[in-house]
Length: 98
Image 1 (cartoon, rainbow, N blue to C red):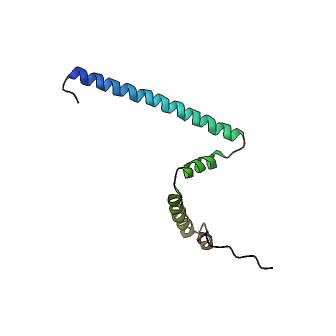
Image 2 (cartoon, rainbow, N blue to C red):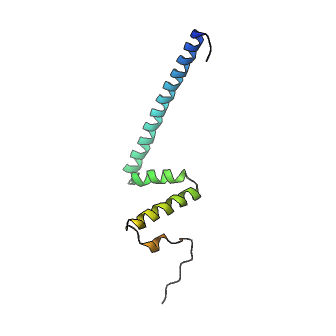
Image 3 (tube, helix red, strand yellow):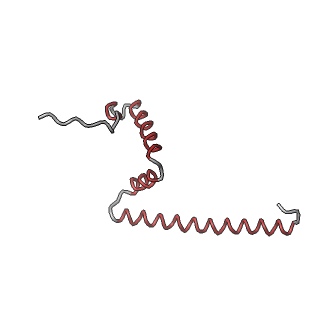
């Protein structure tokens, strides 16, 4: 910071004002996002699931797969998911017998 108290005061004031403007913009964007979710809900979309989809799209495939594997491991340990459902989903599915 500068040794001149007036310059330092002006710099501080400038920083605080910039932060305040950005906080206002952030609130406006949050309001816009809330409006889009409300619109989606009005059109019959499940907003809880929609939020999960938005969150998943932010992650790369490897990160999602790792999280799913750990989640499935926890679910199996808690008896909430049969073990056979956690097997490799990329494996070929056998043809049904006739």
